[in-house]
Length: 110
Image (cartoon, rainbow, N blue to C red; front, top):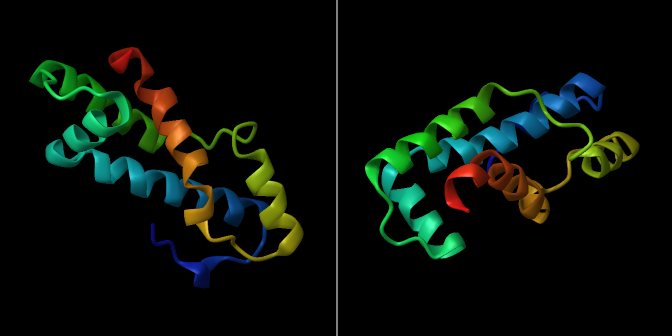
């Protein structure tokens, strides 16, 4: 997960944009059929997913790309970044981002 730390100023809007960029990087990776199939097989034990279901999941991921950052969900990370004034390594917070992905696609995998 690569984001540009050079744009990070510690302002609220920059923190939110930084979080959105990290979340969207993961979502964009999952928009590729093969990557999404591997993710669903590993995470949900779904090895044979129909093309229709894949399209619905990809549509949910595309909606996530334009959705605002849920500050309640990312509140802890937001406050830590604001307090420190520097972006945290987002790799340490990947479960938080994948949780957001799971919320977006839950209707199609459960």
